[in-house]
Image 1 (tube, rainbow, N blue to C red):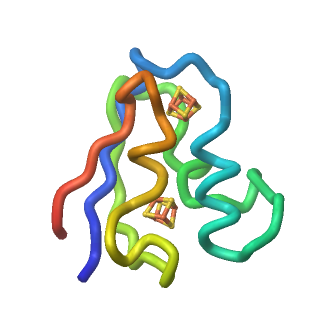
Image 2: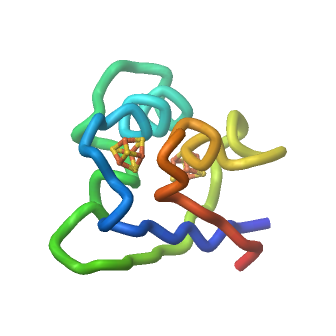
Amino acid sequence: MTYRISFRESRCVLCRFCEVVCALSMGDEFEPDASHIREIRGNADTAEFVCDPPEACRSEPRCVDSCDQRAIRYSEA
Ligand code: SF4
Ligand code: SF4
């Protein structure tokens, strides 16, 4: 199963916690610049992409729970 991850720029406070969580989920290392989430944070008000999740995110996307601003949502892709 893949996830469609949606990101809302207007809610984001740029804490980058989601990037750390994503990078750890994908590669088990602290490398936020390599995260999937990093790729969609830009100037658009909303952005989305499809994630083929690693084992750590198979039951639910960790990036969504990591954001207390509710800037990240997901649906099944
Ligand atoms: S955790 Fe939420 S508020 Fe923080 S950078 Fe990610 S999307 Fe933005
Ligand atoms: S589902 Fe997991 S791998 Fe995919 S963007 Fe979210 S945290 Fe990163």
